[in-house]
Image 1 (tube, rainbow, N blue to C red):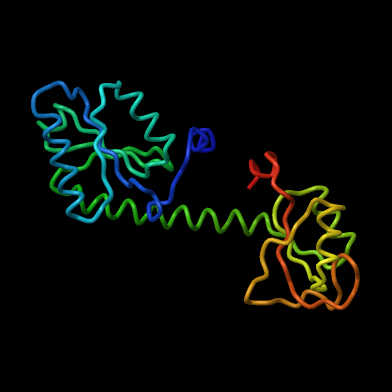
Image 2: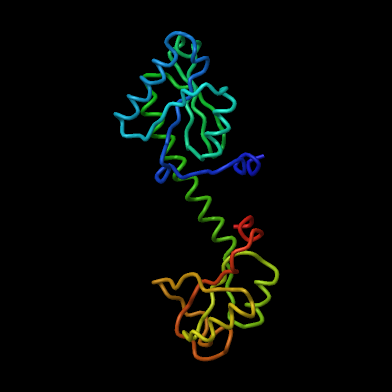
Length: 214
C-alpha cells in the first residue's frame, strides 16, 4: 500500500533533502564492509551528492526505518556478498522500489534516480493540488465547498480587511495566496457582494483533518 509506505515518515524531494543518500553497511563487522561503504560515500560526494554512512551499531532493519522516518530519498545497502559481486542495492524512499546496481555505475544511477524522484514527486503534488482546488462565484458555493470538501477555493474578493476578517471569524477560512496571474471569476466579492478587486486562494484554517487530506 503506497499510502502506508509514505506515512511511515517524511518523503523529502531530493533537491531540498539535507541528506540525499544514506549508505547502510550490512554485516559491517565483517572485514572490508565499512571501508567499502566509505569508499562509496567518497565517490558520491565527489559526484556532488549529499551523502552519509550509518555506521552505528544498530541493526540494518532499525537503520532502514530511521532512514525512512527522516525522508532520506535514497538508501544504498552494501554487504559482503554485494562487494564480492561488485554491486549494491538502491532503495527509493517514495516507492520503496529496490534495484541492484553495479558499483562502477553507482554515481550515474543515483543521479538519474534522484532526478526521476524529483520529477515524479512534483507531478504528483501538482495533480493533488489541482484535484483539490475548486472555484466559487457565489457565497452559497463558497460556503458549500468548505462545508463538504477539503482543499483550496479560488474566489473573488473585495479587498477589504473587514470582509476578510468576517470570513475568518464566521467560516474559519483565510485567504492564503493572491496570485500574480489574476483570473476574473466574477465582478462581485464571493462573500460580501461588493465589487471585486482580486482573485484569491482560500483555505480552511489548519486542522489535523485538513492536513491529512492535503
